[in-house]
Image (cartoon, rainbow, N blue to C red):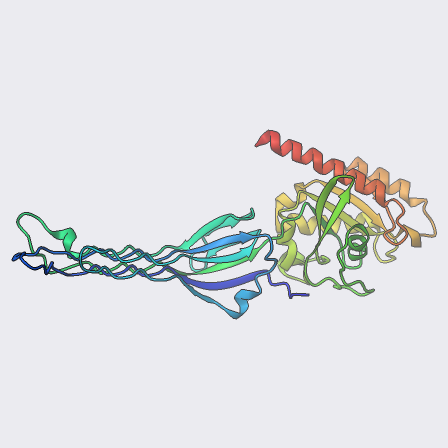
Length: 340
């Protein structure tokens, strides 16, 4: 499995423009041939292209310099030089592009096939034929081609998923994702099993949606503690959050776990806390006393959060939850379409 790389810095340079040509007609029986130098060709652009078949920024770890082709120089007989070829670089859908020096966001590639010019090619220089006038019939000069734009840019990948799974380490997110999709996340009984976001596709009837297993958060994640800070940004683009809580954790009550994770989301970005959330109590197959489920359901629903108790191991409660998630996503899509 390819290593997940979600950040890269690369140098891009547009092709230089070709020089204009200084030339004069040399034809038999034409004693005073005029200027005939052609224009130089334009340099190629460097263009980023979003491609759904590219999933990481790994390639940019090994190659960091990208230059488009320069334009050809002009020639005699007013022949213009050929323009340089554009250089197209494929990046994953969901790539945010920034100027590395200023931090300015140059573009946000959210759709397959979307293109962004990050370094324009230089204009070709004019040949001496372009400078001929009635009073200057034999100009002996031409313009040089302009240099192409150059800059360092930063690429940052933000996953595009419909549903994000959030919660403390060992909340059961990886097992949950493996149950509802064909994704094969690593599953083990120790914190931080998930070291990178993992995507899975879930189908409910004829409706499909993408679910992202986000590495477990801990207190202080918004400050960079644990693994959470690296991946909180991936939650930003999800439409809906499934907040998974381990109901068998003897060290923390479900209500406390919920409040702590939500606090981290809010501290990272207030917008995250406003995202629709569904609270999912996990591992009910291991519960010896289920009496607290009604209390939890009442507690979360009074706060405006739907609550489901499930077991990803036995499948109990899973279909009911997935049906609800699918209906909620359809509802959100309809709202977005009406607003758009």
